[in-house]
Length: 337
Image (cartoon, rainbow, N blue to C red; front, side, top):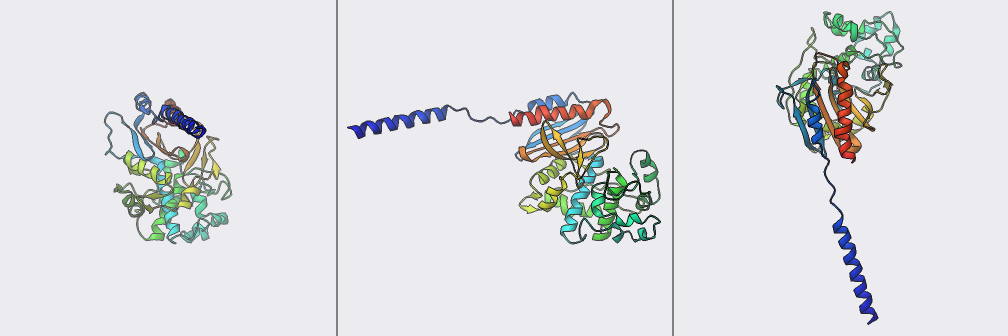
């Protein structure tokens, strides 16, 4: 009789526990609807895409924009070039990031400033070549020159190589020239074969310098969905469709801060990728003039892509601040809640 009573009591207890378990509300998926609504209030914003757990959950396009219309990603191109450098090293076409760039530009041996011989591939990747910048006020003269590579290499040394950050599109263009020399084919062809095809799309050709070298730090053309694919690729440690497209170690080291922006002390630079916090969460991102972003949050399984007007800096009219606030409140926020 005692055994029967104990059994009844045990069954009753299990039933009560089961009832409590069933009463627990099922976890809700994040509500991202506020992101698309908020996007309409940003006049410079052309598109906003959000991928969570590998699924596209937000896809906003301003009037006149679409999923198939390529965007000029501006300096976000530098992050793509950096990915190609990582693949080239993995394939043995470039020995290592410590390889002196004089290997491909032997004319540096004739330079009066022998410090140029100390510049390495890593210095180009991290914007620490020490060469005077070709960006900002120097940009027009550089892209108007007859030989972009020679012009960039001829800039005077303004800091010891490997030390402070000197942001320069010419520095990244030197990486495109190195890729072209090392692989004996164009940077566009490498981007097409090594990145675009494994990700399932075709990459449009973009401008070249007077010698035919594809622009290594600007003007690359990608649709917003292609940008999402790049973000997903880096979020997954370089894996896509069951294939290691970019070496995992390269993806991880690309987001290790190695220097800091002189204009934004909270923004750090790795191998062609920026790092910062948005909404209190660490993110690694590609960034182009005007507000072109490929941003991924590894711990949230989240990718955010934005394209914006290229006619005005994203610092003007508070566009960058508004966009980052939107991402923090209407994208990162719902995932955390």
